[in-house]
Length: 217
Image (cartoon, rainbow, N blue to C red; front, side, top):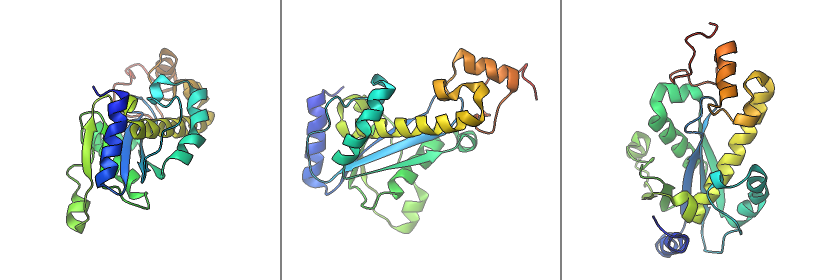
């Protein structure tokens, strides 16, 4: 895995050959309910990232919230793309991640020349819409563990996590039995117990093993 210094160097080097460089990461992959959210952040020139920036999973909710404004001030642009629980059921996790990734990129005003994304999977390959339109697809650099060491990916991770958590808070107000404000749709025992008692909602991923054999229909 790259070091933090090497992650920053990767962004600097990319900026030497591309006008706009993007970082991309997803949140919500393993949840039983709620959307997948992909965040994208871009830089046009290098500057030092906000202090304390790292993978969103390593930060408290309060720290993630506190980082939002400094991150928005630091990046050139940022955007989000989502895929609903129904789209996860229809396309699988990988297909839904690709949908959300393309949606996030499409919402940027300036297209990046390269996207640096977390993990081993290129979420932008095999895009039939780009192929048919003749649009120039960005280069992609996949970095395992990039959410910890590449600041643009870390920024995308934090912004996506904060926005998804807020969305789950709003949904949780309508479905208080599932305690989404606390578990964010992940499979805690309290969440699974509520599923057994109340069944699934439209916001649950019906194709997943929700443990509903004895739940009400």
